[in-house]
Amino acid sequence: MTLQQDGAGEPDGLERLWTPHRMAYIRGENKPSDDSSPQCPFCRIPGLDDAAGLVVRRGRLAFVVLNLYPYSPGHLMVCPYRHIPDYTDTTDEEAAEIADLTRQAMRTVRAASGAGGFNVGMNQGEVAGAGIAAHLHQHVVPRWPGDQNFMPIIGRTRTLPELLADTRGLLANSWVG
Image 1 (cartoon, rainbow, N blue to C red):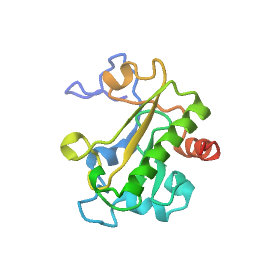
Image 2: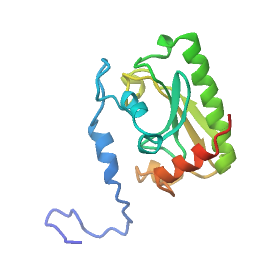
Image 3: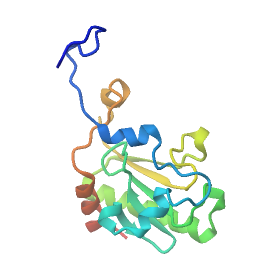
Image 4: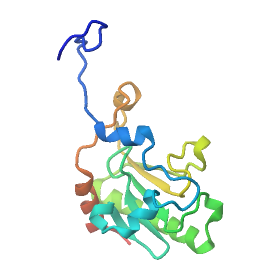
């Protein structure tokens, strides 16, 4: 490491985890507007094959996909195929399938990885924390004892023990319907 005049790069005894893939998320790249823009990743994903789109399960009205920027290993999202921004915009059938796929996702992750609990929810609107507010999606975030220690709080870094493609394969092959 080269030392710089302003102090940047000086050894401080801390380890660094390089996560350049998160820059696209931080910059808001490919973030859709409120219209059904071809830039919307949740509209684009169903047209890809399952492995390329990280799709774990497809339903009639909704699908389950791995989060490209996960909070923990196995972080899934349940998305309607229809480009709608708000849960109140779902039909009764869409709401029922989103709920059913969410339950199945929890069962699958629990069976495949022994998750001890889950955070499940939707951030409705940008001010509520939705990274992609234009297309409804429900997060299913598995949790384990001690999984979120100092890393995300102090280090502002999340650790993942396996590649997303490997996680997708494990969950798709273990799907509990």
